[in-house]
Image (cartoon, rainbow, N blue to C red):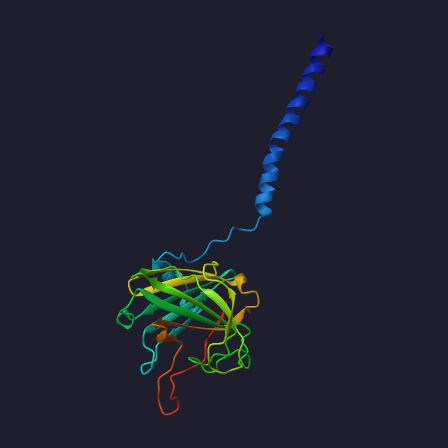
Length: 240
């Protein structure tokens, strides 16, 4: 009888150890999975019209353009661009008096996608005009801020010339950008992967318009004896 009791005790001990091993296995698997998982992406800037998160970005990691004192286009005063591995974020300030008709305020964004100053075109507002892609949308509609969700077009004209020769690649509303504004400032973000051949370094510029005429352009330059147009090159953007 004593032998049977000892045998039962031993079997119960083995069963208990086995159960404990089985209980811990899912936990260990979960911990291993969590250790191997890449951290979830969290955008450093939320596009909501609250610009306080821009103050948390190191200024040395931003590309900044300010309006030149004697520019012919003074409707935009400053543009800040920050880029990480996922998004390009843009913040800009505008002169409210430059866009009195807020029923329809057009906005364009311009990309020298390959960072090559000998390709692309549309030198209407930039010199050289080496733009491959143009986004066209609105920041105001019906007297209220509107989310910037532009169409995207590719340049089809001759290299480095003026004009407006574009072929649409994405229609407006495709989700290329999102945007939000408050007061006399606006922020927007673009998912970089949506322009497949956009390099890690590229040129960027923008304008705002009234009745399809530019009142603000950045970057820009002052008009003087050496620059009779106020044009300058696009801002060079990269992950810093």
